[in-house]
Structures are given as C-alpha cells and as structure tokens.
Length: 310
Picture 1 (cartoon, rainbow, N blue to C red):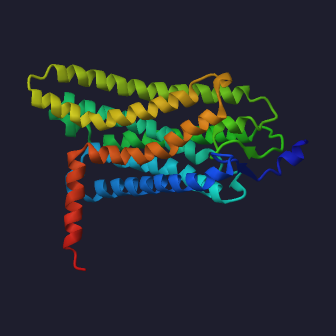
Picture 2: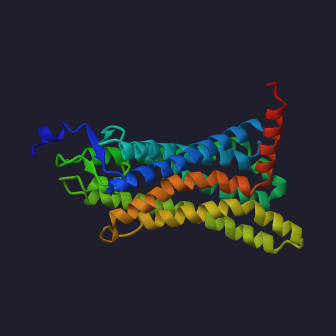
Picture 3: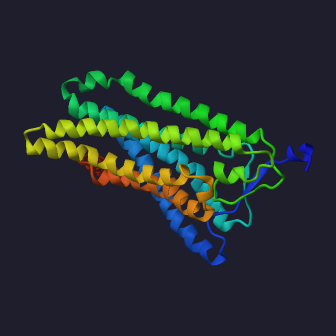
C-alpha cells in the first residue's frame, strides 16, 4: 500500500478483551462495577484529602495525586473497554491513541516514589519533616513527573505515528497500547521497540530504586527504635504504600520488561486488565481500610452529612 493511502488512516478498531460472545455480557457487568468503584473511590479520596482539615499534610497531598493518576489512566481505558462489550465495532481516534494512558501510568510510578521519600523523611527526620517536605517541595515532586511523563508520552506517540502503517487498523487489545500497535507497522519497528524498552526499564528501575532506598533507610531507622509501639506505628504508616507498590511493580515488570518473543497478547490482556482497572480500584480501598486517619475523615464527613437539613 502506498504512502498516500497510509495517511488516510483516521481511527483504530479495538478488538476488546474477549472474542467469545457469551462472555461479553458477564464481562461488561464485572468491569462496569470495577470501573464504577474505581471512579467513586478515587474521586472520593481526592475530595476527602482536599476538604478535611486534618488531612492537609504532605502524605495526603501525594495520596491525592496518586488517586488523580489512578483515575486518569483507568478512565483512559475503562470507558472504551466497556463500549467494546456492547458495540459491534469499537473505534478510537487516530490522534487520541496511546498518549493519555502513557502520561498517567508513568506519573503514577514517580508519585509512588515521592510517597516513599515522604515516608522516609517522616520516620527518619520527624523533627524536620514539615521543613523538608514544604509545600513547594511537594509541588516540585509531582510537577516534574507530570512534565516528564507528558514529554515521554508525546515523544513515543509521535515516533510511532510518524512510521508507516500497513493499512490495517485493528488493534488486538482492549485499549491502545504500544506493543500491539507496533505490530501494525510496515516499516521497521526496531528503533521504536528499543526506545520503549529503554524508557520502560528506566522508569520502572529508577522509580523502584528510590522506593527501595527509602524503605531500606526506613527499616534501619525502625530497627534502632527502642519502643515497640513506635516500631508498630512506623510500620503501619508504610503498610498501605508497600502493598500498592508491590502489586503495581510486579504487574508492570511482567508486562514490559521481557523480550518480544516472550509476549503473549492473551496473557498481556489479562495483566493489562489487572493494572489498568483493578489496581486503580484497589488503591483507595487499601488506603481507606488500612489508614485510621482516612477512616476518621470518612466518619467525620458522614456525621457532617447527617447533620445537614433534609
């Protein structure tokens, strides 16, 4: 197909999660519930950490941005996925493909790193905590990842869409991901694959190193504590974050840091559904159930709501 025909490609068709018709209705119901819980939970966390006066600390500032990124990348995937279960043909515009998802998922990695650093400062330097983690520092720690993620998202998207497509516009996935998109290219995708591999490895490893270093220093500080109550309190403040980190990084390493020959799109679909929809649903649940301050804020919000005149 010549280049003139290639430029006429204006949209992609998403194949969806399942090919079997009898699974469409059950999957639609299941993922509608998951996405709804995710939206309600993350919007609730954003609202709660914004309006409750006792949650105006750096820890909850980062938690609010974690909820924002969860809401962002789950919403970049969830609605299109649900449409695919009920529509005969689910399309996504050529210009919207890929960019928004990359933006939010990369941001999430470095927001989690910032949260680990925040816990390190809180436990290892409690007297200097509010000085070190000033409002200006907190904004820098989230703004830089957003700008870097936007740059990387645009770079990857432009690099892919400057290549030649073969005229096929069917993506074997339920959202517009880079790996299935590369299979539609006529031109060599070696350079793009290398860029994606290098940046994926850098983003995962660099953010994980920050998390690991923070928790090694935290563990050393906890072991030096004489009080069992102090050790328990320190561990409890890190439990929710550690749970989120382990679940997300395990899934992402499985997805992106492996040779192309090892990829199975069916397996990747399952892993993708887990980290694009289920993890954003779990994060606010984990932070709500394991955090006394969040539960206290929810209780206060409920009491204030009950006092409103009906």
